[in-house]
Amino acid sequence: MNAVIRCYALDAETTGSDADGVELQRLLTRLTHDKIVQILDGVLERCSSPNDYLYLERLTIDVGSIELDNLESELPKRIATNLESALADISASHTDDSRALIAGGNYRQSRQQAVNKALLFFLRIGRLPWSFRLPTGQNLEQVLTENWRDNESALGGRHFSKALIGVLRDDAARIRLLRQFSTDFVARLLVRYFPETAVVFEKIRQDLTDSVPPATAEDDRLRTVVQNLLVILSSGQAVSQTMLDEIDAIVKDRYDANYALDRRFAGKQQHQVSRRSDSASRSQTPSTHRQEDELLAHSSYPFDDPDIDEGVYVDNAGLVLLHPFLPQLFTASTCLQDYKIVKTGRALALLHYLATAETVAHEYDLVLPKVLCNIDLPVPVETLTELSLEERSEADELLTAVVKHWDVLRNTSIDSLRGTFILRPGKLMRRGDGDWQLHVEYRSCDILLDSLPWNIATIKLPWMQNLLWVEWSL
Image (tube, rainbow, N blue to C red; front, side):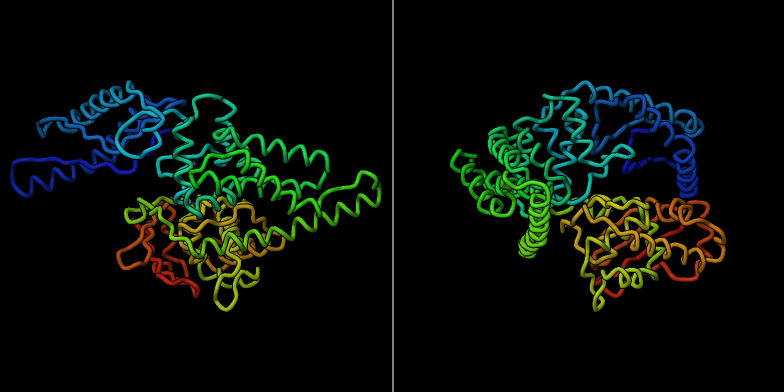
């Protein structure tokens, strides 16, 4: 099913007594559950295309008057007919790139436009739009790269470039781009949409070819180029040759002393120089992150999450089941110090591993883990935190302990625990008092929650400032 329905409502008027109104409500509730949802799914599936997206902010269908005796048979048919007609009108319209990048209204957009819009949304907010789903087994960088390969021209052009510059004026968005995507990808993004930057990348690559530095040195140089170009572009300035020369000079001043290899060296001597260069490159990474963290500390985060009060959807809502065991896990992995999380990237990666068994966590999958770690949702986090074998073993032992203490699970495997309870859809929203509310999708197996030996209705871990209220029931 390619359709994602965020909300639907039936508005009906009837004449008669209060009892008649109650009976109509019951009938409509049953019809919605038994027929109407399936009707909506079927129509949306028939009207969908693998290469186009229909975005419907709000669609109102008037089915007219129906006799109560005919409601059960007539209402689903009228909804299907009117919905197909409305979708056909929208599908026939063309949406230009400038409108496709702006939320609001009902319109058709290409797959490339939808992916570009998702990228801009992610850079601003730190998660993906509720209406956008990544293909199974692919991350956002892979999807964007695939779109570039499949379609060389219809990718937003100057409209996307302008929108991207507007987003990147925010420090947090620039840092998110650098932290969540590979340096090579960001370089290709800049060359694609800002062709004037190609010359500096070509110059750097030529210098790298001449000096043959270790791989980490190459990535550090490219990252320095990308950082400086992003600052220039986000300021609204045109990229001049003088600026490109200045960037080239910065890179040479910073790295040539560490990475240039004398061609006279060979064998053991060259190996020793390479090892020193590699060590130097690694030592610069923490400094770069400290500078980024200092910049974030003074950021105002101008992009508000448009959905946080109404609710954002998560796929790992069952993580709340593990809350009694998290302090011990974070302590063992040195993420926790004086009841404060000091290694946020590692703590988030551990939570993601607990839910998915995946060792690399992308920020758009970390909405609920951020709340559990007391991290503000707009704050960019590192995506390349890989867990050691020891850390993964500690996490697996936590899941084993959950099964052991939850007697009714008996010999359930930890992967079954993940699939049955932890990887569970839910809706997270901010309450008016600043606390969080999580609604977890109920399934028939959740009757086992009655025997859970610890409370999950309210959660406040030692480092959390606000309560997390959990509703996990029919």
